[in-house]
Image (cartoon, rainbow, N blue to C red; front, side):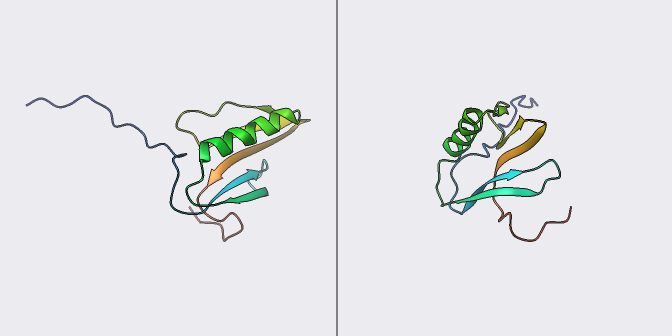
Length: 97
């Protein structure tokens, strides 16, 4: 009996979804400092890339966005933020882990 050695591909977290999502900026303490509601079926990869480009144009150093990643880190003047796509309303209650 042979087992397949193929690995399952990780799902792309930036594929469009049939629900509202948010572009969220969080500070070093994970507190939301900005959020933009995105309509269902938004091109999430384009939104995140545009947010990265805008940060860099404003003088921020921004990390790369990996192929299976829905966020990037940016820093400027000793301040570091996480910019990412979230599927839960960032103004809602915090989920306990």
